[in-house]
Image 1 (tube, helix red, strand yellow):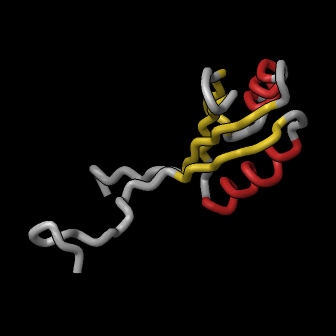
Image 2 (tube, one colour):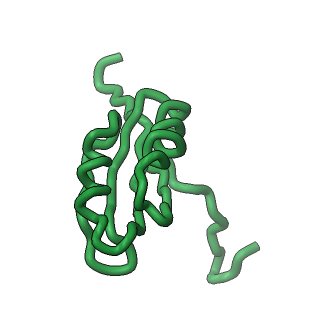
Length: 97
C-alpha cells in the first residue's frame, strides 16, 4: 500500500470563553489528549483548537466529553475536517436543475 496516506479524523473548534478566561482554557485544552494546538483569537471567538484522533468515535469522545469538562467555555463551534468535498449541485449554463 505504498503511496497511500490515511488521514486521521480531525476537527477545528472555535470557542467562546468567560471574559478573561482565555489563558486558562488554552492551558486546559493543551492537556487534553488529542488536542494538537490551541491558540487565542481576536474577534468573534476567543480560542481555536485543532483535535485529531484514531477514529471518529474517539474524536467525538474528546470533543463532547473531555473538552466539555473544561469550565469557562460558554459555547463551541465544531468543524470536522473532510478530505472529500461535500456534494452539491452544479449549475449548467448558470441554472441549477
